[in-house]
Length: 112
Length: 113
Image (cartoon, rainbow over all chains, first blue to last red; front, top):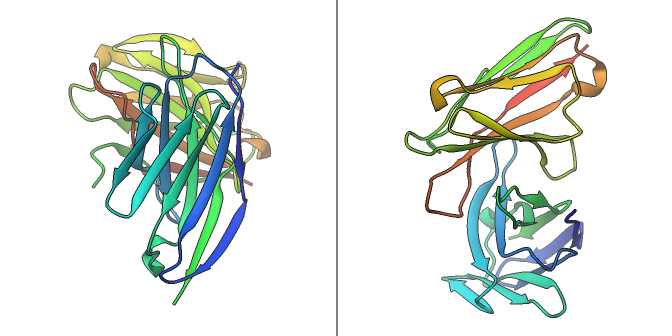
């Protein structure tokens, strides 16, 4: 089955810096790659996603890139703000039921 | 408000007791998933419903776990004879028939003492 690895596990940046989180996946049949933000005591919230027929997608300060050949994808956050502090999860899915397989999460801390 | 409601938000139970959680998905989202999340980990898939049919179960879902989705609307997840290892956040998510994006609820945090 699918296996998703995520790095780093923690990331500390200064406000205004960029942050990059990387994930690799194992199943070449996976075709959908979402990123979730989870704040304390809340469920994961979808922030951006990408399908396998696209190499890059951007939404304001957030972008995701996908390299299908290398089977890795990355989340890029520019001009970070303290409210970006949270745990971020990548995930991958494919197949008929599209169940998500999550990475282990990255705790992002943005210091003012 | 995410549109997916889970009840209760928190549950503390004694080992050996049975517990039941409820999920009310976004209406018209026919695909419903249960996930379990332990501290410091990503959510892990438990089971999947399409309408009222339970189409996939993880091997994480032991015989003590059962899930239902009568009439393809709300869903319940029951854990019988709870163990301390069942302590976790139980998340419900749903998807519509023509989109990829999942919407998660806020979860039910279970503590078994």
